[in-house]
Length: 282
Image 1: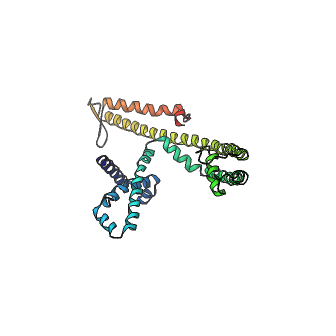
Image 2: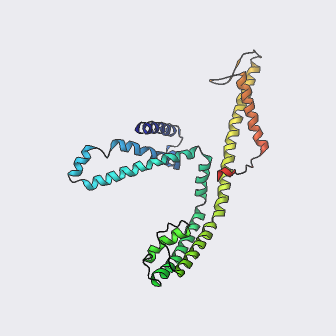
Image 3: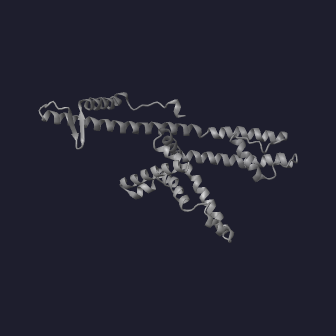
């Protein structure tokens, strides 16, 4: 596993370094969210190489009285190793679905704020009620205090229901039923707005990808046109290779392939930009 991780980190580091060198603005590159995630995913490997928990010198210092400092250092190393899971976030660069999800979360911060506000108000309402019904009226000790009842209200309103705290009395069960129904309604209120934002974000990203594809097709068509002009200027010498630019030579098969690609790009304009959201995106 260490060899596989070393190869992967070396590849990611090379890619990150090349993108940093090619970036027009280095500061803008370092401020990018995905670039920050890449750096946080790569750095723990190098830190763990420099400082290792199994270093015998650290054990000697630990026995000598530096236990508190080394325990904190060990905790930091374990946290940095856990950050390697951020490798998965690199898939967002190549996945339209993950890009849509991130854009939706960024655009729906107001809806998520309203959801948290509604949830907090309902939790502060039902927690004293269930504490009163269970502790004061029946004398059970599961709901020992109102702050302890907050946990029960949260897991009940979000329909998780771990079962560690359960109301036993009839009044407590009535309060539980009310909290569950209120939680379902509260969770459903912003869901429609978030769904429409997700659909709109998917359409925008899809149109952006189509636009980039059409620009590539237009560049290929321009290369074909340039190759045809050079062929006519040469007087139709019947050569097998055509030059479409410095360092680029096209044969007849490549010219026909580029013409087909250009026609494919032009055909996207006739189809329109209205793309329906596939069911697999949900």
